[in-house]
Amino acid sequence: MNSLNDIWEEIVRSLSQQLTPTAIKTWFDDCTPVKLQDNCLILHTTTEFKRDIIVSRYGNTIRSILSDLFSCEFDIRVLTNDELNDFRDEQEGIRALPELEDYTFDRFVVGPSNKFAHAAALSVAEEPGKRYNPLFIYGNSGLGKTHLLRAIGQEIHQKKPELKIVYIKGDEFTIEMVKALKDGTMDAFHNKYRSVDLLLVDDIQFIAGKEQTQNEFFHSFNNLYEAGHQIVITSDRPPMEMSLLDDRLRTRFEGGLLADIQPPDLETRMAITRNKASRLGMILTDDVVEYIASRITSNVRQLEGVIKRLSALQSISGGEITVKHAAWAIQDALDKGVAVPKPDHIIRETARFFSLEPEDIRGQNRSKNTALARQVSMYLIRTLTPLSLKDIGAEFEDRNHATVFSSIRKVEELMKTDPEMAAAIRDISSNINK
Image (cartoon, rainbow, N blue to C red; front, top):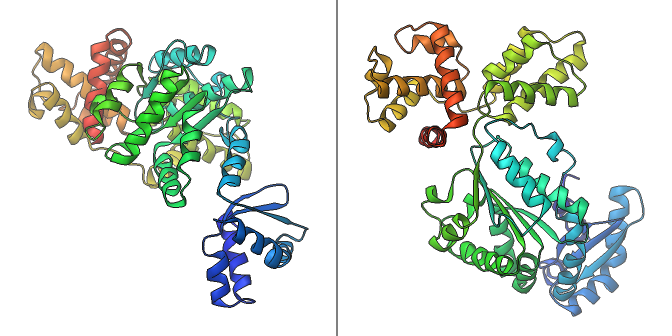
């Protein structure tokens, strides 16, 4: 059995072999599985009358089917609407924070590109609802937004286990709302999201453009905010760049603290590589670490995938991991469908941002604006593609790898000290990704 729904489908299939289609339709059409807990299948139906019939007339049959499926004794419990609401309230603290063991602050590698967001997340975890509310963390996929979001939940849960915490993804909020409307359980839906102490919302961008979802989220947001309860949100872009976001929500989001996460620099990527390797029991040589970190540049999740491939390789073949092995793992990651923008596209978007022509950036023009645009282009190609320094230089009338390396380091240093440069890199990256 792959899931709770698979189990229920198998039960209904078995029942259909014993009962008439009319009986199945009458008693089980609106009966749905809720949870499998401690050798008990919990179901939901719409009325007390249907619940009593299912339990008294078909309970033993369902128990027998479950026993055949799992080779052990099972019980069933059938809930009506009100009973389902009470059950969800009881379960909220148990299922609010999934898979948190890997998402803690001590496992988050801090560097210049994420230092501010990390500090803000720590502050919120120390005093929820008092400093930065809401906290809005944004950045491209795979840079650690979800890690910080769940680390906040983990930290608060450990210090104050009595607090009610809910973690939800933007698209899941919509799905839950639609289901609540269909089932007539909107009161339970409102109670879930408007009475929590900490609301963690991942990928909020998925509610943009959905009018009813945004309206529901707006009212839940207001209830929590006015009660002084903490809200933390992540997105792949800042509120101002969500063209389909309701103006009321955009204002609320921008009224809190906005913290962006940029792609990590080389030193941070190397530290992340070592960190993830050590957690899998691997010690990589410096040349392997640098090779991986210099080629997987814009997505921490991709780094983790490469390390896992190398770990699997080492467990099968044994021996030390070499640069050749790392090259294989990286190519395998790229072959699995990782979208990589072309250098032409990166140069074109950079030129457009700086009001230049692509030929200006590729050529020998040494004006201050053009030189900076050229350095930014080199940095972005290095960050967003697996091209080597030599290959990047070939895109700019065969400039040597030392020139390319110097340009990349200069942009990285500027991003650490110049907020306008960091914002420019973010905006150009966003345009490239679009």
